Length: 155
Image (cartoon, one colour):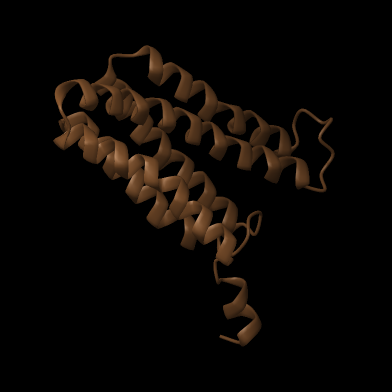
């Protein structure tokens, strides 16, 4: 691998640090849910669900950005960007729905949605529609989030 190819696969420092900072609420809420007093654990569980829905929406926004960055004509309903635009609004809708469900079911819905968005993101990178470094950022963050949500179900 040449230096330029290797460099393109390196996660930019800002993305790495901001990604880690964004994962802190998942970890903190999960820890508090497990070891906190019942009142605090309930608040942390609610915060985990709400933050999960917010971040899921954020990931959908990334897909929206990839779609509108595409050179294809966005006015054609059959164009691939239209498909990506449609997919990009699904995480927000799923996140909202998860908040209306009983908490444990909502956590499962969120975890599955994070896994599905990860697959969409990996495919985008594989198709050169997202940066080459993006999977290296998304894998550990997604695994952290999915684990936090799974522990939230068990807590």
